[in-house]
Amino acid sequence: MTLSAVAVDAGELPLGGGLLTLLRPALLRVAPGGLVAVLSRDRAARDDLQRWCQVEHHGFLGSEVVDDRGTQRHLIERGRLGVPRPEREAGLPLALQEDGHLLAATVLDQAPFPEHADPHTGFAPRGAQVEPGGPPYPVSLLDRAHVAPPDVARLYDQAVAAQWDASRDIAWSRITRLPDALEWSVGQLMTFLAENELSALYVPSKFIPRLHPHFAEVGMFLATQVADEARHIDVFLKRARVAGGSLGVSSVTTSHSLLSLLQIEDFTEAEFMLSVLGEGTFIDLLRFVERHAPDEPTFELVRRARADEARHVHFGLSHVRHALAHDAGLYGRLEQSVRRRAATMSAVGGVPTPIQDALVVLAAGGDAPDRISRGHEAFRELLHEMHDNRMHRLEHAGFSAEQARTLSELHTPNFM
Ligand SMILES: [Fe+2]
Ligand SMILES: [Fe+2]
Image 1 (cartoon, rainbow, N blue to C red):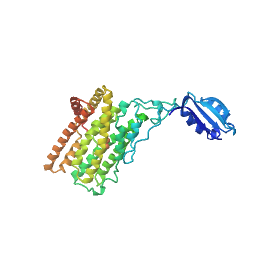
Image 2 (image 1 turned 45 degrees about the vertical axis):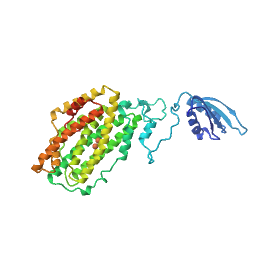
Image 3 (image 1 turned 30 degrees about the horizontal axis):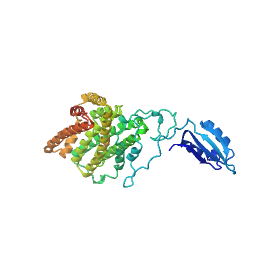
Image 4 (image 1 turned 135 degrees about the vertical axis):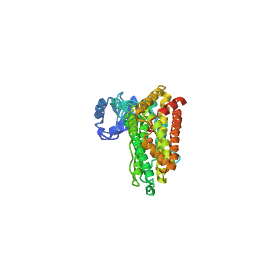
């Protein structure tokens, strides 16, 4: 609470030996022009305070003796320069969960995001009092509407609670070498998954330093996403090699597709492409691998990765819906972005053939000719499922059914 006058008893403390430690916070408690009375028995205090006030642009109004022990009362008027007075009243205590946990979402409720953030506040946490005159920081993501969906702190809390360990949490010892065709299929798919996961590590990472720190929860969520993707890369590469298998082919189609993702410089556009379209489609791919997993540990590691991806898609959808609700022109820009990417991909053909073959063999459970047609059928169904689910996600993001169909059909054949 801001007061009009405050008294400080400094006893015998000299100015540089503790008096200022009491005086400075007292000055912050009064508004500019407000008064602080300093009671002191230090003989030098009067001269010292006078000089200090001059340097710090406060007014020294005078001194008087107030008792027979030599105590003096020095009167100081708070200056109009310097640290601004606190904008907020004293806060309420943060509400704990029933289990005693304290969520980031609770903090965000009490200290909400600003509409627009000022680059001059640097790394000052949201809610801190900032001395004016600081240098501008090179951050470009400054508007809540294009940066911070309302449920980001809740998603961060979920992400932190859901972290798992790619070393300990998978029963690696229970994986044995598969028949050659299946072992090849798993190695090829894990190579492809890890390659796409690398793009999902790089793309969100590059936006973290562009975020204004007042939207820290967004950076904190992206950090959990980056940690998730690191774990996915780890777990998929381990699965490829654990039973003596090797990595498969990295195709030119995938390379073109992931480069076009990496080159997106607009945060919302990147979230849309990576998380709504790419990771959304990836969820269907992971579900397919899970359904046809050759052993229980492979099922389990893919299931865990898919649960993480669901959170990334959720954040992407939240982000895009929030931005679309505040910016009607965004529909057109996102559509253009999908069309540009489709144009760069038009020369490179459909789903990379090693991936097609690996998915067919996985679904067939091997390369026996009588099973392969079943695998083919499952692969074709997967493509339909991906398209249908992409359309649903696009409609959920706020696109019309017709826009959703067009955009889904233009999506990269690389899935991500
Ligand atoms: Fe991932
Ligand atoms: Fe992801």
